[in-house]
Length: 137
Image (cartoon, rainbow, N blue to C red; front, side):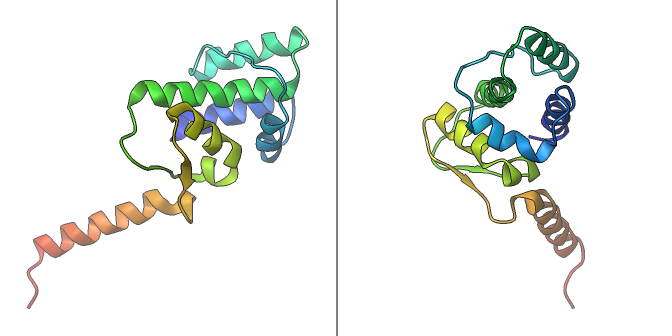
C-alpha cells in the first residue's frame, strides 16, 4: 500500500472535511456496506462526493474505501501462510489491517514499526549490496 492508497486515504478524508486521523474509528463504526468501485483516486473522489450527496453516512463511505483497498490487494495476489501488513497506513489504521485479514481469510499482523519497514528493507539491501561489492580486508 504505497502512495496510491495514501492519496485515496487523504481524498476520502478531504471530501467530508474530517481529520485523516479519524478515518479508522469512523470505518469501525460503520453499520452498512457501501461499495466504492474504483481504486483510482480521481474516480474514487467522485464516488465519495456522490455518496455524500446521496446522504450516505461518512462512516459507511470510509469503510467502503477500506473495503475497496482490501479487494484490490486480494486481486493482486494471494496469501500463502502468514499475512503481515507494513507501512504507515496500516500502522495508524488497525481496522484496515483487520479488514485485510478478513478479505484473505487469515489473521493480519501489523509489523512492529510498520511505517519504517520499507526503510529497514532498503537499508538491509544496501548493506548486502555493499558487502558483496567491497571485499572485507
